[in-house]
Amino acid sequence: MNLNIKLIEKAEKNHCLSEEELISILKDDSINNILFEAADRIRKKYVGDEVHLRGIIEFSNICRRDCLYCGLRKSNTNIKRYRLMPYEIIDLAHKAAGYGYKSIVLQSGEDLYYTVDIMKHIISNIKKLGVAVTLSLGEKTFEEYKAYKESGADRYLMRIETTDKKLYEELDPRMTHEERKRCLRDLKHLGYEVGTGNLVGLPNQSIESLANDILFFKEIDADMIGLGPFIPNEDTPLKDYKVDNFEISIKVMALVRLLLPDANIPATTAMESLNRNGRVIALSSGANVVMPNITEGEYRKLYAIYPGKICVNETPNQCWNCITGKISSIGRTVSKELGCREKRNMA
Ligand code: 5AD
Ligand code: FES
Image (cartoon, rainbow, N blue to C red; front, top):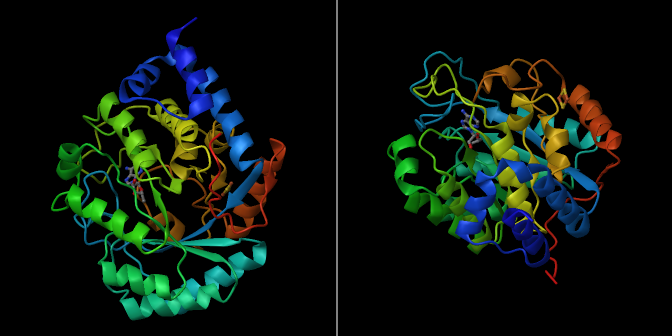
C-alpha cells in the first residue's frame, strides 16, 4: 500500500504527523480523496454534523499596513475607502442576530480611527444580543486586547499568514514575525479563543513551510484555524503571480483537521471564490464553520482583499438562505449554539 495512505491512517488514530510525514502527504496528489475522507470522518467524530455560522461585518477597509498580497494595503490608491460608524456596525449585528446568527465577527483593516473606547462601545452593545463576539482587527497592544476582552469579546482571529519568517517579513513590510507571535501569545494569555491560519500558495512558499504552518497551529493549540488560497490582486505588487491554489488549500485544511480534531475550521470565502462549490467541498473535507458576510450594500464590494470575492451583490438575507440551503443539501445542520471550541479527549 502507498506509504502516505498508511500515514493518513496513523494520523486518523493518533492525530500526529511529523514535518517529513506532512511533506510526503502534501507532495502526493494520488491520495487526496483518501485524505479528504479521513478528515471528514474526524470532523464528524469530534465536532459532529453541526455547522456554525459566524456573520462577518467588514467595517472598515482602511489599513495602515502594506502587505504585498492584500488589496487593502495602504499603497493601493485604486480602492475607494470606507469606514462604518459604530451605530451602523451595531445595527448590522442586530439584524444578523435576527436572522439567527449566534456569533458575530468584526473585521477591518488596521484602522486607527477606532480607539479603544469606540471598540468597547461597539463590543459591549453587540454582546447585549447574547451572541459570541469575535474580533479580527490586527496587531494591538496587550492593554488594548485586555480592554476588548473586558468589554465582552470572546474570540480573536489573527492569521500567522506563513511561519516562514523570511517570507513573512518580505511580504509584510515593517512587520515582524516576533510581534505577530507576541500578539497570539497575549490573546491566549487573556483567555480569548484564538484563531489563526495561513495563506496557501504564496510566491516562494515551500511545501516544507506549509508543513511547519500546520505544526505551528498544533503547537499553539489554536482553537480555530482559518486558511485559504492566495488569490493575486491586480492592485498589488503580486498581481502577476498566477497559480491555482484551491486543491492544496483543501489538503492543508484536511491535514489541520487530522492534527487538531476538535478545532473549529471554517470553509473560507476565498475557497469558494476559486471554486463555485468550494465551501461545500471544504465542509466535506474537515471544515465545520462558515463565515457569511453580513455587511450591506456597496461596502461588500469595497472590502476587496482579493478579486472574484463571492457574495458582493447579495444581501445578508440572501446569503443566509443560500448557505443554510447548501448546508442542508449535504445532510448537515445549522448550529443553534455559540459554537465555542469544546476540547475533547483525543483517545
Ligand atoms: N488572497 C487571499 N487571501 C488574502 N488575504 C489577504 N490577501 C489575500 C489574497 N490576495 C487574507 C489574509 C488575511 C485575511 C483577512 O485575508 O490571510 O489574514
Ligand atoms: Fe452569499 Fe451564497 S453565501 S450568495
